Image 1 (tube, each protein chain N blue to C red):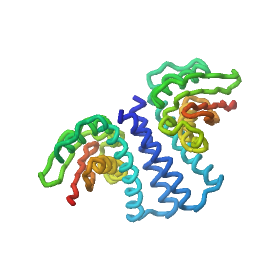
Image 2: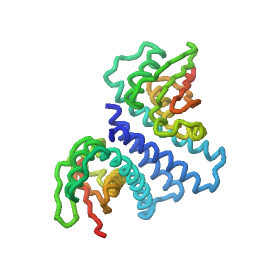
Image 3: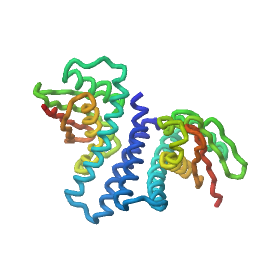
Image 4: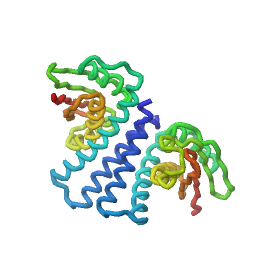
Amino acid sequence: MADESLFDFLHMEIVAHVYKEQQSSKGEMDNKDRAVCISVLEGMGFRVGQGLIERLTRDSPSFKDELDIMKFICKDFWTKVFRRQVDNLRTNHQGTYVLQDNKFVLLTQMSSGKQYLDQAPKYLAFSCGVVRGALSNLGLESVVTAEVSAMPSCKFQVVIQKL
Amino acid sequence: MADESLFDFLHMEIVAHVYKEQQSSKGEMDNKDRAVCISVLEGMGFRVGQGLIERLTRDSPSFKDELDIMKFICKDFWTKVFRRQVDNLRTNHQGTYVLQDNKFVLLTQMSSGKQYLDQAPKYLAFSCGVVRGALSNLGLESVVTAEVSAMPSCKFQVVIQKL
């Protein structure tokens, strides 16, 4: 469906653009430049996540606790944004959550071989931001990172920051 | 629906990002800087349009003529990308088409007053590119411009470039 791929294509364009602009201003990219790109993409995702969750929870009852919020993120939110539910949610009950998506939408277009594994982080930064933005709007400050060991499966780790 | 607003939010982020980066490298923006931004956004749209139309026409029969293509753009393509059909299509039968959308999706979030009219072009550049990219993939090179006289209504003018 084209309306679905609209997001995928647009996301690809953004990633390409952010990397290109950084590269053109610096020539060769080092780790610091790559960190700048990741941070720019993550920031965009953060604001998008804030906007989305606001609409999505407008008519929702309030959540009873942190786990309740995480379940909402894994089901309703994930379905709306990433077009499927999270396959597995684990937690240590101390504020750390691991969300596993076995077919993460933004990785399914990439080859499942190992040769692009090192490219994965740039395609996940935006999504990490989306999750962090959504949680932030629900009152949970967090650090969100993503890890790919075999495409297109992806694990997002959410660490809630206690005040 | 959040899956719909995902595109809208992402689009807003891209526009903001492209303008911000241009501004931060130049300080005050002049008309030339604004033209650069428009061109960057249009280029992104072009590639997204190419990708989308490729998926959308994969199982479609081929088109019989230029008008047939334009009708497809106004109905199927517009619905998939901009979530409604074009309200009115006019042509001079010499390669110029005017597509009028009375509630253009990327303008409906903006105030309908006149005070933001001058901001409209930056929110239309990407979409002009999308249309040009789609047409290009169907074998029609074109120049696509957009004009707003009253929000959120928008007229896209497509001028097919004869070889």
